[in-house]
Image (cartoon, rainbow, N blue to C red; front, side, top):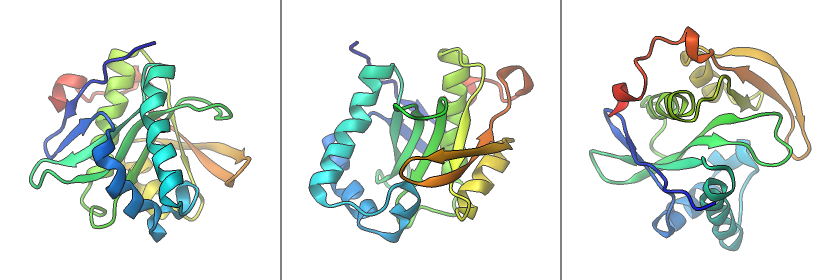
Length: 181
C-alpha cells in the first residue's frame, strides 16, 4: 500500500507526515523523562528505527500518527494520531508531547482532530486510548475528549495499562473534520 499522508490543521497546530526532520526532536524526547510512559528512553539508533516505524505504519495500515507542529513557532511539538500495531487490543488514538509543549491543550486539540479523521474519513466506529495508571496528564486528555475507562490491558512490555473508550461517532457533536480545517 502506498498512502498519501494528509495534513490536518487545528486552530494552533499543523498535523503533518512524520519526516527525517523529526529525528532530532524525537531524540530529545526519547532521551528525556517524558518517554517513561511510551517505552522509556532510547538511543539515537533506536529513535531512527522508531521514526521509520511511525512512517511505515501509514503504509501498512493506511493511517498512523502525525508530527505536531506549532503554527506560531513552526517547531515540532509532539506526535499524535492513530495507532494499531501487532499485539494491540484495538485501534488507538495516542499522543506524545515534546518537552516544553505540555499544559497548553495541544494533546487534546490534536487528538480530537485525529479522532475526527478516524471517524469521518476512515469510518471507524470506535477507538481507545491506552494510558499508564500513573500518567495523570494523559488520563485528563482522555477525559477531556469524553472517553470513559473501559478495563485494563496487560501489555507485554508495559504491564497493565488503562483502556479509555472514546465516544462513538453518533454520540459526538464535534462538527467533523471541517471544524479543524
